[in-house]
Length: 361
Image 1 (spheres, rainbow, N blue to C red):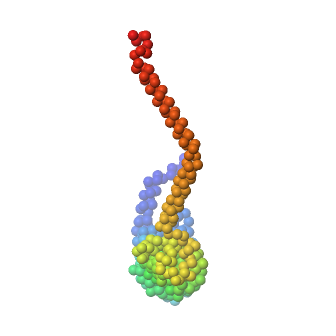
Image 2: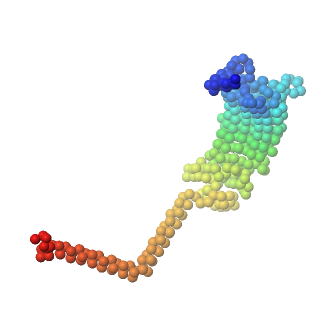
Image 3: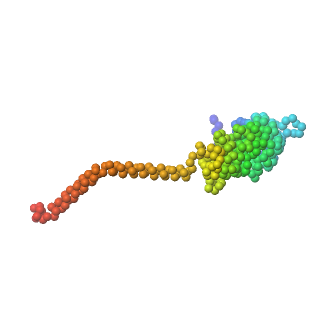
C-alpha cells in the first residue's frame, strides 16, 4: 500500500517551529534548499557568523542578524594568531549578502578565507568603522554594495578611507547614504566601471574628479541644483559620451524653485542664465527638445491655424457656389408656397356649406 504524503498543515507547522527548535539545541539556525549551494539565515538572532556551514556553499545570505563586529576571517572560522590560514575556509563561496545585520565595524581581513568571493552586499548596516585592511585577501571581489550603510550621511572618504583602493571592483553601490559629494578618486579602485550614487543628497555633483575613464555613474534621485556653476562640470564630463550616465533622462532639478522637478536634459541655457557659455551646453539641445509649456503653446497656435484654414475653405466654397445656392433657395421657397396654397385651398373647400356632400343634408 502506497504511503500517504503528510498533510500541508503539518509541513507548514514544521517549517514554522523547526528553526527555533534547532537554535535551542545549538544547531545552526541557517537552512538550505535541496543542495547546500545556497544557505540562508533570515531574521534569526545570530550573535556571530554561522559556524557550521557546508564547505561547498556558494551563496550565503544573512538577514536581520546582530553581528555588530566582523573580526578577522569571520566567515572562515576565525584566524588564530600564528596560524598560516583561517580555520575553515569556504573555498567556493562567491556571493555573501549580510543585509540589515547591525554590522558596525569591519576589522582587518574580515573576509579572509573566502578566496572565490566575487559579490559582497553590506547594505543597510550602520557601519561606523572600516579598517583600511578590511578587504584584504578579497582579490576576486568585483561587486560591493554599501547601500544605506554610511551612517548619518558621513563622507565616503571619512569612513572607507583607502580600504577600497587596492581592490579590483567593477561596480560599487553607494545609494541611499545621504552623500553630499561624490567620493574622491583616490578612494576608488582604478578598475571601477560603475558607481551607483542614486538617492543621495548630491546637489552639485562633480564627476570630473573621478579617476576611472570608463566609469558609468548613476545619479537619479538626487536634489540637483540647476544653475550654471552647478551643472556645467557634470555636462562637460558627459560631453559626447552620454553612456557615462545611464539614467541621465531621469535627472531632475530640486532648485531653484522655478525649475523644481524639471528634467535636466529638457533645460535650455537661457533658463540657467549661461548664454555666454554655449559650448558647455551642447548636450541639452539634441537630447532635450522644447519645454512642455512651449510645446503646449505651439500646439494651440497650430490648431488655430488649421481651424482658420478650414473656415476659409468653407467660405470660398459658399462664394463659388452662390448662384446654385440662390437657385436652390428659390426652388425651396416656391415649393413651400405651393404647399401652403394647397393647404389653404382644401381648407376653404371643406368650410364652404354650398359644397357640402348630399349625405350631410
